[in-house]
Image 1 (cartoon, rainbow, N blue to C red):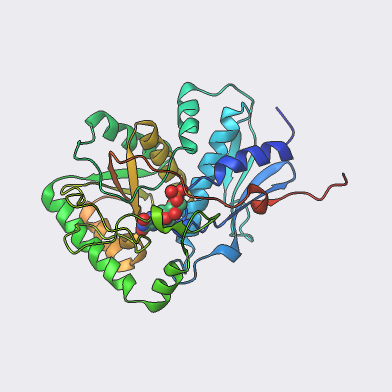
Image 2 (spheres, rainbow, N blue to C red):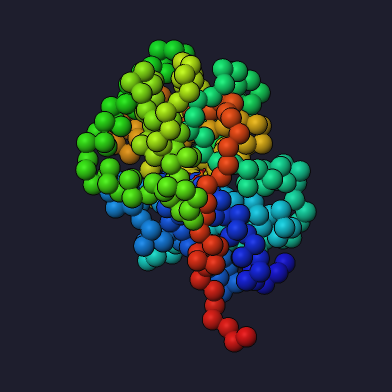
Length: 324
Ligand SMILES: Cc1cc2nc3c(=O)[nH]c(=O)nc-3n(C[C@H](O)[C@H](O)[C@H](O)COP(=O)(O)O)c2cc1C
């Protein structure tokens, strides 16, 4: 067993980690080496005060980045042992990774890793093809493998009830001036190292849309290209809603997203019903299950697209100072 991770390993794994999703593509994470361990922390300078006052979204993003980091290290043959939120006095440190026994990656790890650079958030209408049962099963299993859960919202009336809840949460958020202004501040006119380029933002919302969408986009949709009438909606959750549960949910989310990418599926993220506490509670009750919803996904077959930009990996690293 190695005594600790090195700078080269951190840098290579962080390149994968930063491909994780984050609210408004804010990339609120930092990676550092401390006593041979890699630590993943929330970057307090990149919090979203209006949309994420509690830090939930930053911890989901951090958990997703942590999953990529673990996967990257595993595929390099240097898997890690992980402790979540290791220091009670440093709540922004989400995880500490130390080297485990080196071993060759599994084929499943290689496939998921190959999906890291291909995954991106879809926001356009999906094709009408249904998601096969086998793929649905894989997504549910992916969440479970990371101690999360994924509940598929099945049936027209359940989807309609969810849609009403999501639309009302969207309206609550949209009434908040600070929330709207903050979101507008993350929309980019073209390719950028952070934020959401308008071209990736999906079509402008229309009154007939079943589900709400964030106002990132400026594109009007082509005639006849409405959203699918019966979307496959899935709610991802964790056992509870502590900060640690949210990091767990972030890891489960990323495993689900990479599994979906590997299966040729597209996913939209939809967090309005999670952000509004009353909506989240209503969603929890409607599912009638133990645990707390942490994210909502719309899953289907989408048009090809591209991942949006990330800041240079060096901007996220805190490296020990060394003489050259
Ligand atoms: C906590 C969280 C909440 C998000 N909420 C939404 C959302 O409500 N609508 C949306 O279109 N995308 C949402 N996203 C997706 C981000 O906008 C997206 O991950 C980011 O812009 C980076 O783009 P990429 O996923 O294509 O790499 C969310 C992501 C996270 C982590």
